Length: 595
Image (tube, rainbow, N blue to C red):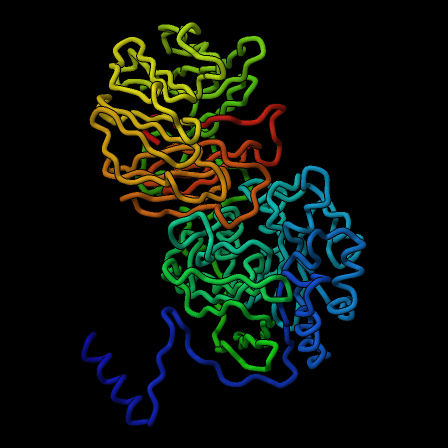
């Protein structure tokens, strides 16, 4: 192989030029007809206090036959009808009759519980699709184009297996087996970190993974997103972020006129091939039969990125064992024999403040708890068998369900005014547990040893979570300011204490090898200490804040107040409550042992 590569380089040098193609790049096509359609795309457009949307609109005016893809957040600060008319209408509004939009988070900011976008749908009318869904498709030349809704909490849409949008996408692509397919939506699946982000590495938003898999299974070629106010191009990837020649190429074009963002050069995604920040411009895609050209043009007329690629033939999935079906994910271990070997069971429970337990996957249904009068449940901890659990409320009352043994409640006489229980952690034997409080007090029960606590030390922020070491001979506490307190055989690897945080830290999760841990903030930002970064939600819009995180497979799983689940692991997604929030907020998540 090395000799062949050498001969290729020599041949290129003899020809007079050396061309280096990005990783995963496909063969260059022959030039197509001049009449092939053009799609111009950008998101994050109209701000009445900024002149940049007029500058990007002038670029579109130069291509009067082009179709326009508006990638969400067309009007700032919120997408109500008046703001669309005043801030978007005078610039990009002149192309309304040839615009096919996708909704963004600012468009949903005006609807009750962020589940509707009345201004966006009133402004664009039928071109935006069904107002209860926000997704649709159309054909452009020989290409099939799909506009999706990445605000996954919308009841009529959804992004998980079995959701309305996932089922529609499967049917739509089955009915349109085009050789070339392009999809666009607002929130990008992959993106390099911006300056000022709470995360510590390249990031991603797994919300659209199911839809990405469905698109890839049907041979889709291109994904275009906005939301992050800069330009970035990625190579061909699978939804898991692996280089895949059958995967889609992603473009981020959040450069339509909103405030500009900047990259953090220390945290660039390894598959990012081109990046430009602090710039305004549009992406022009020339769509040929079997191929496409791209050019990202800035408002000063300079072409900052361009290239050519060919389409993937519409075919079956490149990895059948991981592509979604139109049915919800199974709740028992019923995978076919051809599925790669994995854990015998996988699942999790969510606990809401009123004591309701919600099981997913192989997690067994269990009775809930009734909190003390005037109290809320705060944590759930499964037994080693996975057939029971302990639930604790903020007054320290413990409820044992399934095969869990009730050992003791927290003695209220131990607490000072304002002190509340915040978490419970079990020993490896299941014959004991610790109850922890917001003051950093550790109360051992059963065979749980007392290893020290912070009850006598003033804290900069309340202790919100605790976790024992695998041996049961140590534990960590984590404060809302990111401070870490290690006791027994728990090792300190670093903390966020004393550093500025965009949102309070909620949980700590030890790495699988026991030599490091992750912290999660309520905005979904991840801080990794001697642990591999698996992804975060730190730069993504969340309908509700993250309230907890647990180790899951080779990574971690987060839960939000509305029951939304964010899975950054090799384990299967088993469902969430994100589209149907419970009456009281979700406060904790616990993983079935073996997940």
